[in-house]
Image (cartoon, rainbow, N blue to C red; front, side, top):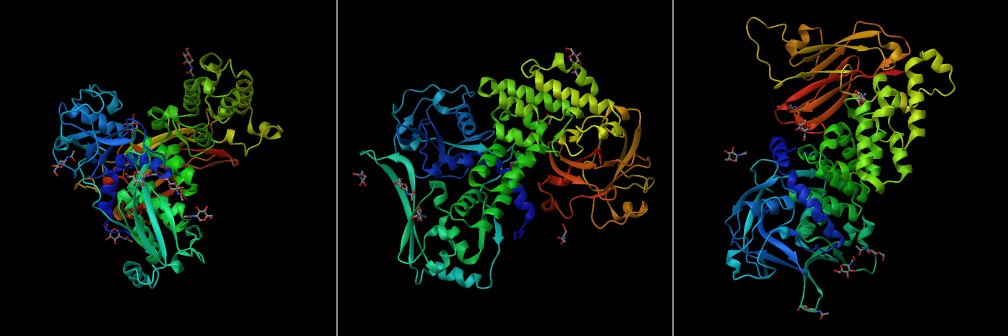
Length: 581
Ligand SMILES: *[C@@H]1O[C@H](CO)[C@@H](O)[C@H](O)[C@H]1NC(C)=O
Ligand SMILES: *[C@@H]1O[C@H](CO)[C@@H](O)[C@H](O)[C@H]1NC(C)=O
Ligand SMILES: *[C@@H]1O[C@H](CO)[C@@H](O)[C@H](O)[C@H]1NC(C)=O
Ligand SMILES: *[C@@H]1O[C@H](CO)[C@@H](O)[C@H](O)[C@H]1NC(C)=O
Ligand SMILES: *[C@@H]1O[C@H](CO)[C@@H](O)[C@H](O)[C@H]1NC(C)=O
Ligand SMILES: *[C@@H]1O[C@H](CO)[C@@H](O)[C@H](O)[C@H]1NC(C)=O
Ligand SMILES: *[C@@H]1O[C@H](CO)[C@@H](O)[C@H](O)[C@H]1NC(C)=O
């Protein structure tokens, strides 16, 4: 169970530190004892987003001298670490460095992707001392918070929790030694890797619940390899096994998740994974979402993986405009394309983005892979106008003629034959996803209401009629035969008990959204309409169903929603989704 201590501060801080998380995900490479690569940079001795600049060269971390160091250079470092930008050059010293001074007289333009791409005197050519080492402070998601000063308590505690914690703290009677070691990346003169380590003494009785510790008869200890950045958190991880309680900070959450994964501590892994999910919205570059998806896939955390895919499905349109779009794996794009909760303007938009993606990838994709992706497009949902233009407008038509022709035929049949005819057609399978609309936000299927906040200001003259509402008219179904057969909808947002009771609604929480029609539709069509909540015009943070025309939004504060939205600044979008039954 997650307990919420000071929820508001938590969200605030989680939101502040997203870019920091992106950087930390990079660090995860090191846990597999991947050594750092030539030219990598890190911030040492400070926090996630601040510290002494160090660069890796010829197997050693070294520092940078402040001659010529300015904001342009700081920008390059921060961007190399996946922060949006530098906040300032730091005058502080972060402990005492001992390694080489690798860089001096730096001259960056500010647009370089890596610090090593800038002009400088030459590796190791410097007349500086470590007193002149530079530091930087990077900006995290456009704000100026400080890192590591919040606590989120994970608590599945058991009755003897505190007593067991004391047993661990005292070390009395401990009979299992865990040596935790990390390679720093530096090499000794004799070419062996420098390793730093600590030991933790624990009790077999406790560890034996988790087979991967090997804490069995006759074994007195193990050695664990872990990334240097995670080493600090190892004792609190072991303590958790005694108490089932741990305070999680933003810096520790990924380490705890990874340790839980490594040692098969399921509950901790799930809870930490849930914390990750909350940070998805803030990274507009989608770098964090992608890293997290890959990480989830690697660790087999299916919940986390599903959460990432769902977020990407809801925010597909922005994903296509992001820098990671062309780096998406075939598997990830494929799993997005089978989803009915994909939010897109219309199906033709989806086809175009997939075509562009395929063209962008070029020869690295086999024709089979291309065909497989294209076949996941629901052609019957594409408007008849676009279908007619497809042969001349689609850049892949000539390469994949057979697929396009089959799909077009299927789509035209769907569009022009009456349902009764379709049903008698042995090829028509109403369970076929191709006949199912996704969540289409373009006209005519959708309309929206924007509210600055959910707070209501009444004036004396207009106490009763201030319900924000919107009307829209849609065809009864996507297929062309229903084009002239229309249905009118009205959607409204009720923010207070007052507003609810004035409209004959019984509301238990707020806001409540109602979407209804007085028009009738054929028996074989049902509407599975959706409410989308878009936060601050930036990302979709919730997709909900209606039950009996009603949807209850966020019960109490943001933590009920999958994703937080500061100040509840929602745009409410209503989407009509007809389906054959
Ligand atoms: C940074 O912090 C200062 C002082 O706390 C505050 O006045 C300022 O608005 C903050 N800037 C941003 C961009 O949040
Ligand atoms: C290499 O050098 C380090 C430090 O100088 C030393 O601790 C280590 O034992 C040496 N390793 C070998 C294999 O000589
Ligand atoms: C536990 O033992 C297995 C088999 O002997 C070994 O592969 C594994 O690395 C050990 N785990 C640890 C943490 O030492
Ligand atoms: C830990 O890393 C060292 C090298 O740093 C390697 O020799 C050793 O096999 C690793 N141990 C485990 C359990 O992975
Ligand atoms: C197809 O392309 C033509 C011009 O090349 C354009 O006028 C038409 O709107 C396009 N059709 C669609 C559905 O985009
Ligand atoms: C998504 O795209 C819209 C329009 O381009 C933009 O205003 C918004 O900030 C984007 N959202 C994110 C999270 O980048
Ligand atoms: C709902 O939120 C209010 C204030 O934000 C708080 O006082 C109340 O305890 C919360 N109710 C529940 C059930 O969490």
